[in-house]
Length: 311
Image 1: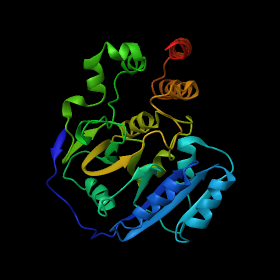
Image 2: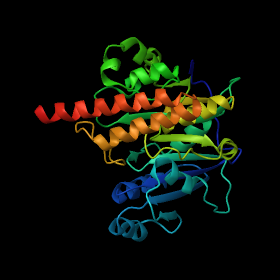
Image 3: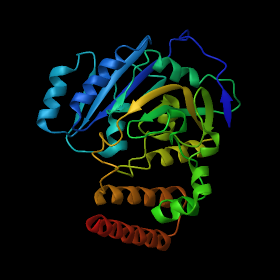
């Protein structure tokens, strides 16, 4: 459901926002992002940087370069996306935020009103309970205008999402894939879209829901956190929002070390293992079905590896 933007609010209620930036071997990008965040026109803002067990050199750069006003947390092990972000989301700083904003370190923000626009999105006139929201994410590798880029996903029936997780089946099911990525609602510019999930590269979430939910599910290391969080929000009677008035730039793959042009078997395994967690915990799929799914994904990974070698 799309709503045209018709209302903005000023920071009259003095809401507080915490921004959590997860760093892994991207100190230069994290420092650049923090500098941009310091230019935000928003009164009650605190910034937390979590280092997810980067190299000693990367950690030293953060320690020496970040302002003392930034809360810097070091993890002695790589906890993955959810675990690393939870360190920042749960950090006791003496301030209780109303909203928490999670950003990948490879995000860039040029709009000084970005945080305010994200908060405004929670205040639109609606009968729905908005628990989380994402801005439009402009992916650097995409040739499409931002309003036509894939942003969020719809929670389909599990068998449909499993079908689309295989590259071949996705190619022969364009209508289903279009439904999965809200293709019919494009362009997203200057509109609000009620949706099932958020974009993991950048999203804002209500602190009250986070606490009630027990923060992010740490059953995955990387990938599909958006679908899991979306399912949790759906089960709690809430919805997500794609905020077409706010936007960020994203150097996709920099924070995870992945590259779309290069096949990475380890990353592919992280993806399907996260899917298995999603389908097992939130859709109660049978153990036999999950084992079959894992086997088929392994076959797909091996086939892709062979094809890449002979190309």
